[in-house]
Amino acid sequence: MNFEEIINAMEDLVENSWSLPLSGGKSVVDSAQILEFIEDMRIALPEEIKRARQIMAQRDDILSRAKNESEAIINAANAQAQKMVSSQEVYRLAQQKANEIVTAAQNSAKEMRTSAIRYCDGLLEQSEETVRSSLAALQETRKNLRK
Image (cartoon, rainbow, N blue to C red; front, side, top):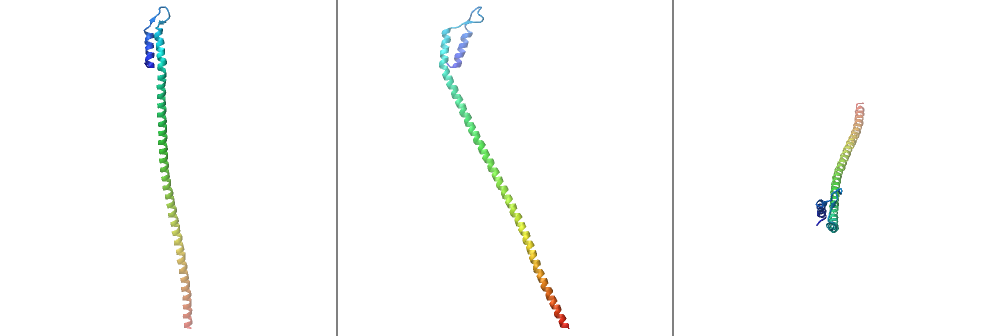
């Protein structure tokens, strides 16, 4: 018998026992039967405790595995989130570098255009000066020819 069955049998024994008149609810119970139930309880109790310990060990194992699994899921989610953040960071840095390159190229183009305009203006100024001086020389030569 298991522990619960023994307790049920003891309960039945007490409920079916003879009540003593004028004793305030006391009953006559077979002491040999009660002692036998107590002995059965001593035998059954270690088995019940062993079973309870096994159940608790299984529960602890299940909880431990669940905890490990949840930690693994959390770690995987964190790694995935970090990967996504990292790829977004790489994209952001690439975009920033591309913007810097475009800005530098635009600035360089402006500087080249300004330099080219200055250079051309300088050449035109020199040409104008050369033409003026040639014109002045021509005018002087014509003037000398007319005299």
